Amino acid sequence: MTDNQQVIGDEQRNAAKLIWDFHQMHHEARPTDVAIGLGSHDLGVAAFAAELYRVGLFPTLVFTGGNSPTTADRFPRGEAVHFREHALELGVPASAILLEPNAGNTGENISLSRATLADAGISPKSVMLVSKPYMERRSFATARKMWPEVDVVCASEPLEFDDYIKSIGDEKLVVDMLVGDLQRVIEYPALGFAIEQDVPEDVHAAYLSLINDGFTSRLTGS
Image (cartoon, rainbow, N blue to C red; front, side, top):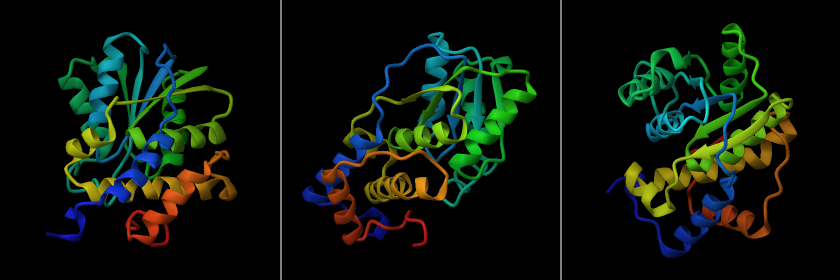
């Protein structure tokens, strides 16, 4: 068994679940002017964005993202390109999709998507960010810093923690990413990348515990 396939213990799982729940904003889905599907390793983001489009929550959908170390093999043409192709397969018309294929981080996802929309003559007052479940809080904090004049609604596939792990197929990778996203939520405001988010004491303790247990592969500077 490789390191990335290790089974996590009950205490580690409980700590991860605390962080999982904190990462989600629990926004109620409602109509917005546009949606932005944030690129990642998780093709479920594209599928859920397509579902939200089909029920009429937004008329225009931007897929954003180039490549990262966790996606280059799976999405060789870039995250946004593969997400767009999947959404087309699921019935979203090409005329409803804008492509932003260059972003390399969440800040660029927001800033370059904003520019892509502006190039298309669209100046939204409200934006739905469609992401992995555990990326909601970081994407919200980033968008509120970089695009404060828009109303931001977060949405993600409604999966429980255990079901999400099954869908990805790699427990340690998911927990590593939960920890890595929380590091960014904590540290990025001081760097000017995001607005501050209050982290409850039990969530912070769970974060430190998982770092101590070696779930560190997605930490910046690791």
